View 1 (cartoon, rainbow, N blue to C red):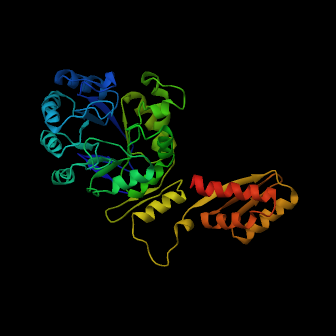
View 2: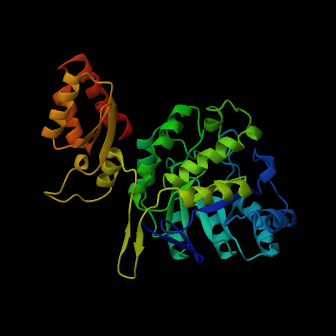
View 3: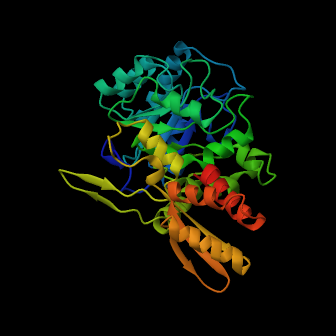
Length: 387
């Protein structure tokens, strides 16, 4: 798992998750509290609000990436960049980094030369010059999953398309990946976003820091019947907690102070992942690894002959209860035969083992009786859905 050095700020496993606050210098942006189009006003907002509230990074937007708004060419962003650079000169604090949200390599290069620390590419290297610019200046770049189209950021339907988009054009040494949560176009449904969120751990397969940007997204508000953006802070904070637990290293938000607190708690009380790093080696423990995640790791790396398959690389655990004595005995005997971990008391059976062995157990039990078929069906659903 790579750690990205952003002007001295370490981003990645073994370091606290970073909070990226949003500063839109694009007047058409939809969330008004984050819009500050005048340089002096924007600098004051950074110094008096964003930094005191705990932002590690200020993400400066030059045009709205919301699909409901008009698209602007690079000339418009270059014109607006003048105000952003003026803002940068006016900011008094040195305790924060600045990222430039753009899809254009020319804008990114000029921003870097003007003092920006990070590039946030919302079109995922659709501009083929973007990786070269970021590598030449040795700056981190956020690669958001997108098709190779400068006018359609985030226009991807499902998780497989997101993976393909992130793999397209490769990565720089300092790439941070963004799975592109949100309603980027009409074909992506809330259900698509929910599935992407549930399976977020799979993006750890890339071995790179992960940025999430779900703050005040409607796919979260819908779950809690909070359709209005101004009512979506609680659902956003709940999601941020889960994002950190699932591997987010940067959380992008309009609500800095609240998010800083939530991220701190999620990091302190979440999975206690083992991370060891020396000059010669680095090892990171991955927790809650599903079979689908293992398969992702295999898909982006070379496999080794005679090594174990993905189904041998992850375990699942089930608690089975309310069984008649005959059914209980059949499950115990089959579990022992398939070399599963097994413990029992008067009421329940604890079953744990690799996906492969549990699959064999399900095959063995299925069809033998209604009760055993119920157990087998639960195992199969766990194998196909959870993993």
